[in-house]
Image (cartoon, rainbow, N blue to C red; front, side, top):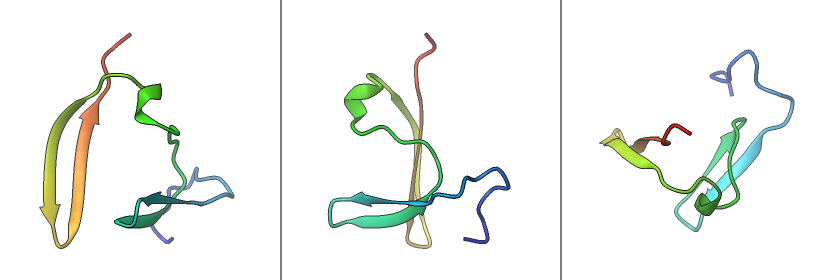
Length: 60
């Protein structure tokens, strides 16, 4: 929790991805990816047991 940004709110949610992962988050999430439509995966990395997926949304 020491890595939270200064503008993080008072509420921390636990985001679960099935039985794979659960992590604290103070960011914004959609209930389903169908809410955002198309997105493009820019890059992926797996380092020190951490999987990162970077993506972008099309400009409206």
